[in-house]
Length: 360
Ligand SMILES: Cc1ncc(COP(=O)(O)O)c(C=O)c1O
Image (cartoon, rainbow, N blue to C red; front, side, top):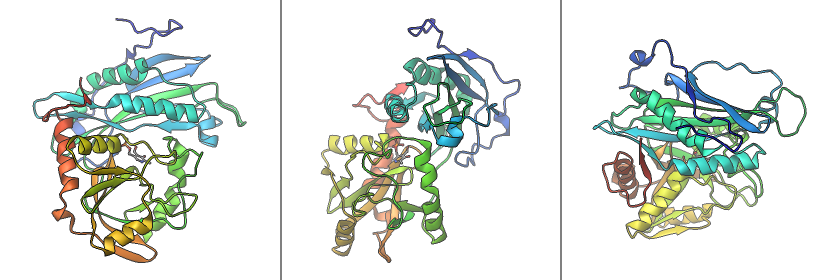
C-alpha cells in the first residue's frame, strides 16, 4: 500500500540494502552502549515545505555543507526509544506514540517542521523489519532507537532553516549503567529555566550540561541532580533520567512544569505504581526535604528512570558538601520491582493493561 501525504509525495521508504551485513562482527554478549550501529538507517529530507525522498540506506557518513544552521545555531532535536525481542523471537515497540508526540513538541519549540507519523512510526517499523536480526534478546539487552532531525540550510544567519534532514539509526545495546549511582545536586550550574527549552529534547540542552557533568565526574560522581534555575532549591532531573524517591513508603517524583523532560519511563512508572495501588505523589520536591527525610531515616530509595538508563538505583546523594548514603540498593524493594514489572511488560511476558506494547 502506498503512503501518501497531502502533497501526494510518497512517504513509504525506498529500500537500498547494504552489500554485506556487519552483523557477524558484533559480540552480542558484550554490547557497549551506543557504539555499535545496525546495518541501516532511515533518512528523509524536508525541502520546499514538504518531506520527501524517504529511504532506508546503509548506516554511514552523510554529506553536509559547513554552513548548515544546525551546526552553528543548534536547530537540532532528537528522541530515544527502544525495541525489544523476547526469547520467543517476538519484537515489540514500547509506547512509540509518546516519542512521536514528544518529537513534534520539540520540533515545534525549535521552529522545525513536524514529522508525519508515516515517516516516524511507519518508517521506523520498516527499518526494524530490515534490521530485525540486530535486535538482541539476551538479558538486559535491547535495540536503542535514535530518531533525530536538524536544520540543513547552507546559510549564515539566525532564522529557522527552510530545509531539514530526519534520520533514524539504531544500536543494539546492553545496560547504560552497570552500578548504583553516586550523584550530587548541582549547586553551581543549572540546566533549564522557566519558559526556556528544558522540556524539549533539543541538542543544546545536552551540550550545556556537559561541563557541569565533567566537573562532577572529576569529583567522583556519576551524575548530577539538577535543581530549578529560579530558586536552586527544587529537584528537577538527572542526566537523561527523571527522578523518583521513596519517602516513608510513598513514591514521590517532581512535577513537570516546563523545565524537565516529560519522560516516557517516568509516566510509565507513575501509571504502574498507581495501577498497583501504591501511594504516589507528583509535586515539588525540595533538596532540603530530601536531606531532612534522609536524616530522619525516612528516605528509603532514590532512583532514575529513563529509556536508556531503565530504572537506575542511586546509592548516595551529595548536597552542600555532605554525602548521604542511602540504604543499600540490594535491600531496595520498589526500584527492582518496577524494573522487573517494566521489563516483563516490554518483553510481552506480563499483561499490558495500558496498551503500551506494539508487536512488530
Ligand atoms: C533530560 C532527560 N530527562 C529524562 C529522560 C527520560 O525520558 P524517557 O523515559 O522518555 O527516556 C531523558 C531521556 O530521554 C532525558 O534526556
